[in-house]
Length: 339
Ligand code: ADP
Ligand code: MG
Image (cartoon, rainbow, N blue to C red):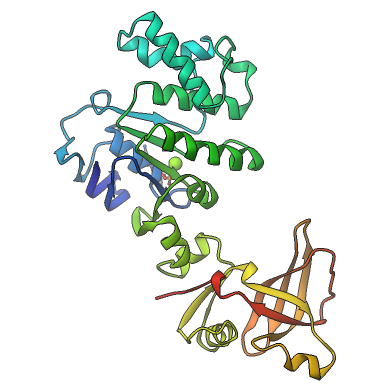
């Protein structure tokens, strides 16, 4: 297993990675999630042995890797742009690490075919990289990274260069491929969807430090602090009376701070008949401030009595106007009470 203790990387006076502790068990996939410039690539390079440590240790199965050069660590690295050899066919790209090790021609051919099947590119062996789409190129890069059976795969924003739809599809494939090949992987990314789709554990990084780690579900449901919640895609963090009002409407005990996803607040037209309004326990009365329609939902900013402005969603096709009265239903599963 991989174990980092107090890993610090500095460039001159600038500390890019600041005392990071992380453990990664065999067969698991850990995503380090953080905004651009938070030190993710520096951390990955330090694990690979490409960046010297200012202090701390990187261990594999308990053994300090300080004296082990990059090519002897048994790790593979994959980057955003794949870095394929453009003049080599797909098969020769994938087989490259095997030939480097002196594997026989038949063994290479068989293994390459298996790897191309694994990444969904069976039959692509004779193609040249420039004839492939961005997603296909990344699959080839992944197959090549897996060819040498690395004991650890290091992935630096492997899907970030792809368009949104492809990224989502390939993220699910990447998860399956890593599972099926029982690969231990450390992925760094700024994209929370990518992290959640691919990894089973998550470490949130900010300004060089890991501020939270746990399973993806734990981190998602219990962000450590307001900045983490906002980075994870929560729309707002409410405190004081606003937090109390929203939690009460959700049937949850009061707390000093609560992070609210946009989808936690479902808006619909306020009933004009008082009789019906009483039949809506827990609903929050609000008025519409701003409206934006998307194909999936209507995104609203609403002003809630005793809470202030919050984000909410409405059913598609319903277009309320600013000033309209609405009722909000609060979905407790889409709130996170902050410590
Ligand atoms: P991320 O991958 O999260 O975007 P990086 O690890 O690339 O973050 O960078 C973290 C910080 O370290 C940034 O402020 C960056 O400018 C700095 N940095 C990274 N590499 C170098 C380098 N080779 N020389 C000087 N500063 C660097
Ligand atoms: Mg980076």
